[in-house]
Amino acid sequence: EIFGPLLPVLPVEDLGDALRFISDRPHPLAAYIFSTNRTAVDTFSSGVSTGAVVVNHIILHFSLSTLPFGGVGSSGIGRYHGKSGFETFSNRKAFLHKSSRNLFDLDIVYPPETERKEKILDVVL
Image (cartoon, rainbow, N blue to C red; front, side):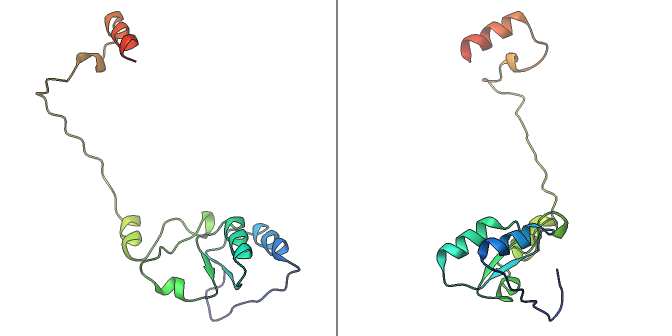
């Protein structure tokens, strides 16, 4: 990955050669393809493991706060920008509150296991 004003352009024989070149290296933060061929774009998109695939542009992806920005593996864990960034840095907490007065709260779901409970569950399940 290069974070700077450089965009290396590497010659390859064909799309398969490009995908092999990419897959022989660590996962890129983003992968770019410039093409009007829909099949080539689809093959590229499904053939590269990356945080983002950008078609026919290089800066637009990063500048859109509605698109998550982040990598795969050593290229970066998590997603940043807008809602994705908020969720990345948030700790979602599960919370369950079961009423202690529930007519349908059957004792078969609680320990200890008994022969009677096993028979009931065998019939129900």
